[in-house]
Picture 1 (tube, rainbow, N blue to C red):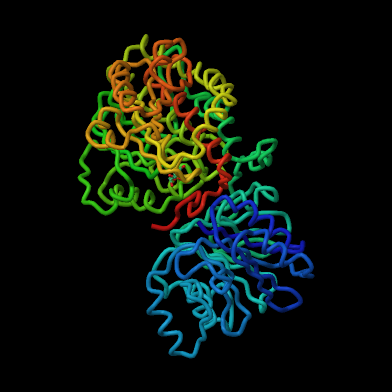
Picture 2 (picture 1 turned 135 degrees about the vertical axis):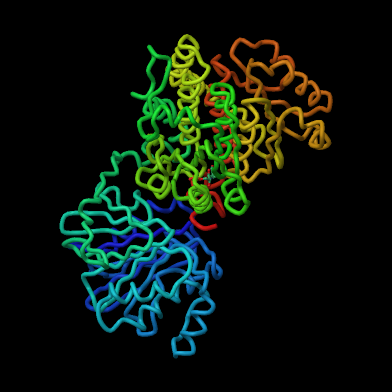
Length: 607
Ligand code: AGP
């Protein structure tokens, strides 16, 4: 989605804006632009396509101004053209605005503003902000932005500058994430932490409805009396975490980071002697947890897949009924929430618009909502009544990998604890804890097979379709494997419960159809082997993900990728790794932009 960065301070703004936009590229975009107040005038540069084109345009430009805003745009209103790229300006060319989100009453406001003599130069909803602010721009810019947003219905995170106020950035938020980065003698505004992470680790997460003035000396809200300094958080990221290091892509780096990420996720949260877990952030007493009679899990995409695995974990361990819902469906249904229901919202970014809306809907109906979130201080982290951070570290690649396995580790710990409160014995609990503790090193063993998986990828690089099958815990893994392949390699792939194949997809199977079967030695192994036979009979090519030592499967599958033996409940954390690597290597061989697949965004902040 769109990215915002703003700077005010003692350094020339242009290089800082460009490097900030570079670090926001992972969010997905189709055009980019900056506006800088230089020598008392507003200068705007924008370009369609990759950020490098904007950088080329600016190569010989002398732009010493110390106040500026930048934007990467992911088109919603109006095609990806230069005139629709941000920043947008008012009629006088003194005010510039960048905006993430969607203005719902844009057409009506546009008509009114045109009737009052304003001239629009783009097809965007954003330009409405520029002209509205211009209407009130005689005095204080902060007040003008406050007055303008009072007319607007919709979601926005905006950053505004004016050549009449050369030391002032104004930021306003409603539904679209914005942070203020607090530096020394300089301050920043951004839609996302990576944009400003090299310059400051101290941020204020803006709240919905807030309008903030940012100067080199400090920040103040429109009310003027809020203690913003009390809201400064440390993001706690190591600078190297947002660099690729020796890896060609963030996705590959993040796949390889999984063992350490899982170690961080469970660190200090597993109690081996008690066969239990301790998750302080749940903010629920033992009695409140015991009072939970049903769990509803909501999320989108990969987070939804993790939720499906959570369903199996919770049902098996805690014997609780669990429902897993797409957040986008939940928010518009009439979901039944009853006493005893606990809603768990899963979101790596904590900023997915549908998941935020679903959380609000659940809270409106009286549910207690917990969040499983990676990004500290994100909207869902702040909105929910409690929750668990993944501690996976920043995930930059659009395709979610380490956040998926991190989420599974958290769901496992929740299931373990609820189980120990109810039916699970100490002995069983200890077995579960030990299996989890062994998992990171088992993941390293799977990662060591990368070369073999890369070689396998060469055989499927020209494929047009693929089927992913699994049963039980492996069914959501199949869904996730198919999602990884389609989102980064653009090969059509479908995940299916293996037994469902007979009810339709089997018609597709022939010698050209690769079928990835997740077939670890678990409680449904024999059933899955029967499904493999059905594929072989129809000459489909079988790639099996199987348990080390399972030599029998080698005679049934065309290719086998082995994973170490673990408990069934933890198998998804190992089985998904080869599927991530397979998708990655196929995408690389096809020349696809792995970290920024077309049309996709890291956080989907619009509905
Ligand atoms: C994952 O590879 C996807 N890019 C996408 O499905 C993602 O998981 C989804 O948009 C949800 O994001 P969230 O976890 O940040 O809410």
